[in-house]
Image (tube, rainbow, N blue to C red):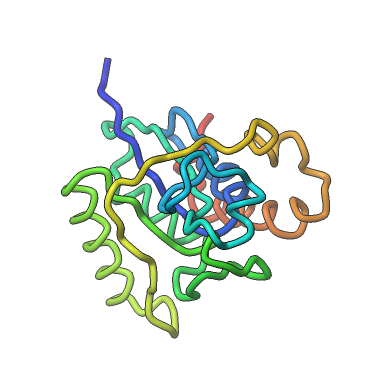
Length: 179
């Protein structure tokens, strides 16, 4: 059995990230949660206040024999705007920042390399502001956040924010979709 790796990424609302990464070949599990703050065991309400320092993140367990961390990051950068500090669309606050919590020195190196590649490619007018942080304690989100898009896909936020990101991912990475 192949070993797995873990990635912890924040790129706006965790519902969007979870919905996309659940569909990516090589991903074994995705869990919404919080990381990078000072309060132990924060609640959604506390994180949304912006006072805890946490970001909404997903913890992704993946098979590196199927999906490299660098390729996982390429998907990550394609599905959110890494050039806006503390904001994704109408979601504003430090909890929505673009952040990679590098679990290993190799992940930090890969993150720096992918950011340099994307910067060189000039895909965005503004510079990438994604933070690269050290591994941080991950706190799972409340149960009602898990598989949110799958269970609540008809809600307006899911229709207008999550669904377009999933559609963009499906179109851009059709060869990487799970069967």
